Image 1 (tube, one colour):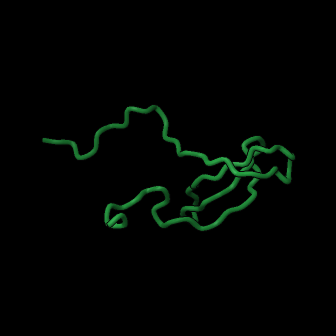
Image 2: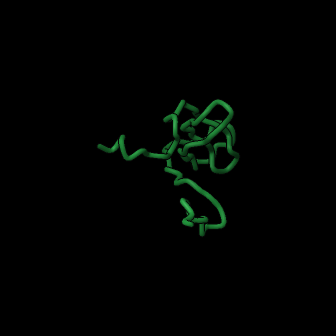
Length: 74
């Protein structure tokens, strides 16, 4: 019997955070980051302050978030 999906070796899951120019309107820190988040409303691409987590922007993201289907690459 083969297991279709191997158990993850990393202790946690994470996504890459892309630095964004600008400063936080709430705390003034110049550490903004863009990354995907999953909420009850689906996937969103957000820009948040890395210092206080203030949301600077939130836009609907792809239906599957950061997951890319092979059929989309053809």
